Length: 629
Image (cartoon, rainbow, N blue to C red; front, side, top):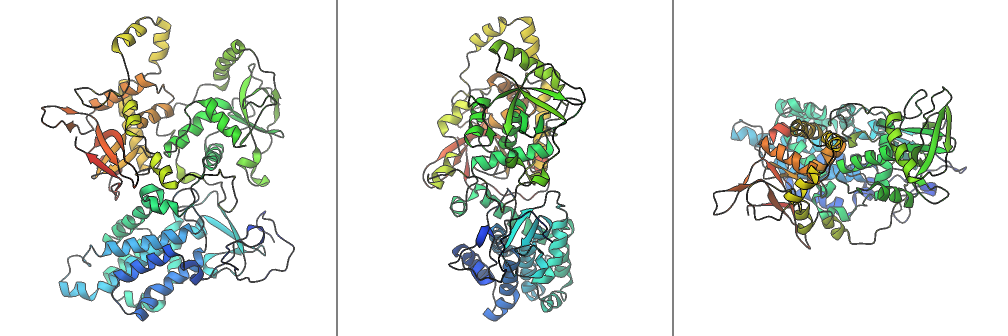
C-alpha cells in the first residue's frame, strides 16, 4: 500500500550506492548515505575536530564513547532538515545543527566544575562522566523531530522510522501538519538508547547525580536537570543564532530562502490559521471555486505584510507593489488586462449575496495546497467576474466592502500575532520556484541593515536636546495649521485611529507576548529586537510601526511619534547620558560590524530584560556594539 501521493517509477527497486556523491536518484528521491559519506564534509569534520580537542582520552575510547554514537546519529537523520522554515532548514540541516550543538556544548562544559559543590577529588573522578552526558544530551536534543515532525517514505511505498537504522532504499519526506512538539524530548529519550551503547549507560549509572540530570534533560524536564539543561540550552541557542544570521560565513554555506518562498509560506499560514474561507451564510475572507482561490485583496496583503514583518523580512509597504510582486512571481493569476485585482460579486447558494463588488486576488490552488486531497470543498455558490468600474464607484464599493465583511474581531495585539512555529503545510522535499541571485551573499546580509543615513532619517524625534539628526522632518507650525483646518468629522475619524495613552501599555503587553511565544526574531540581521550587553535593544521606529500596523491603526509619522512619547512616559527604557553635559537623550546608537562595511541602528535600550524574557538563557548579538556617544 502506497502511503503518500508520491510518484513512483515502474522499475525494479534495489539497494543503491550513490555515484559521484549525488544525493538524488531518479525523480528526486534522496539516496541513503553512509555515516562516512555524511560526515566527510569540511564543516562536519571541523565540528568533530572541535569535539576531539575538548575531551582528553585515547582514540579508541573516543571512538567508543563519541564517534560511534555520532555515526549512528548521522545514519538516522540522513539529509533531513532541522526545521521546516526556521533554523537549519536546508538539506542536511539536522546533522549540521546536531554537530554544531555538540561542539558548542563541549566547549561550554569547560567553563563549569562538575558536579557542583563536590570535593575536588570527586569532581576529578566524575569529570569524564559529566563530559559524556553533556555531549550525549546535545546530540539527542532534537532527534525526536525525525519522527514527530517528518514522515519518510521509501521508494517501495513503505514508511521508514528512525529506529529502523539507515534507510535501505531511496526516500522522500514531508512535514506533518498537526504535530505535537511536546513529543520531541520524549522520543529523543527513546532514540538515545539507539545511539548510546548499553555499556555506556552502565558506566554512567555509577554516578547518580550525573545520570539523573542526563535522564531529566533528554526527557525534556529542563527545570529538574540543573546546570546540564543550562549548558544544552545555551549551546542550542548559540547554534540557532548563528544559523539565523549571527555568522555571515555560515550563511554562505547554505541556501537563502527566496522572497517567493517566503510569500508562499505566508499565504499557506494565513489559509490555515487566519483566513475564513467559504463561509456559507455570511462574510468571509476568501472563496475556493473550480476557477481558483479568490481572496480579499486588502485583507490578504495586510496579513502577508504583518506576517513577514513579524519575522524581520522586508516587504513593500504599498499594496500595489506587493500585488505586482505576487503577480511577477506567478503566485496570483492576472486579469485579462494583465492586472492583479479582479472585481467580483459573490452569490452563495444559501441566499447570502452582498450588494457590492469586491476586489479580489486569484491565487493558484497548487501554490497553497500541494496535494489535491488537502484542498477544501468548493464554495457553495458562485464568484462572478464584473467589469472594472469608475474610480468613484470603486471608492464607494470599498466602503461597502467594510460593511459587508462586518466588524473586525476585537482582539488584543498579541492575539493578532503570527508565530512561525505553526507553519506546517510546506514540504521541504518538494521544490518551490526560487529566484536567481547572483549578488555576493556577504553584501546581501550586510545590506539588510539600514545605512546610518537611512536610519537617522526614519527616527522619530525625541524630547530634550540631542546631537542626532531629527527622526522625522517635521514642522510644528505647519502641522498645527494643518490640523486646525481639519473638519470636526475628520478630527473625530482620525482620533479613532491615532494611538491613545493606553496604547503604550498595550505595546508593552504585545511585546512581552510576542517574545514569550517566539513571534519576534531576535539578533537576526533584519530583527527589530537584539540583546546587547544583556539588555534589550528595540530598533525604532520599525518596532512601533509593526505594532500599530498589526493593531489596525495608522502607522504614519504622527502616530508612531505619539506612541513613542507615550512609551517614554512609562520609563521602561534607559536614557543615554550626553558626554560633558548635564543632560541625557532617549535613543541609543549601535554599530553593526561587518567584514566590508559598518552601519548603525538607532533604538531604545531596556535594562530590565527579565520582565520580557523571564529566565530564558540569552546570548548577546556579537555583531552589534553599543556606542556611548
